[in-house]
Image (cartoon, rainbow, N blue to C red; front, side, top):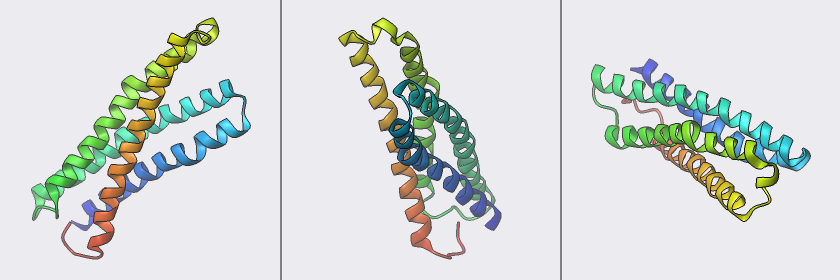
Length: 157
C-alpha cells in the first residue's frame, strides 16, 4: 500500500508542480523578456509538453487510487479524491487536445486577421479558457495535496 501511496503522491507532485511552474514562472518570464510572438511560441510549446506530462501523471494518479481501493481498504475520501483527479485529468485533456490547439491555430492565422476585432475576441476567449482550465487543475491539485498533508503519516492510503 505504501508503494501506491508513494506513486500517487509523486504523480500529484509532478502534475501540480508543473502546472504552477508553467502558469507562475514560464509564462510571465517569457512574456517579460521575449517579443510577444516568441513568448507565445515558447509558452505554447511548454504547454504542449506539460499536457503530455499531465496525461501521464493524471492516469498514474487515478490508477494508484483505484489500485489501492482494489487491493486493500478503500483510501480515505476515495470517491472525492477519485472525482477530483478525474476532473483534473478531464480539464488537462480538454485544454491540451482542444483548447490549446485552437489557440495555436488562431496564432497561425494571426497576420492581418489579428487586426480584426473578431479574431482578437476569439483569441481572447480561447486564451481565457486555457488559463481557466489550468487554474482548475491547480485548484484540484491543491485540494488533493491538502488531504495528503492533513492526514500526515496515517497508514491508510
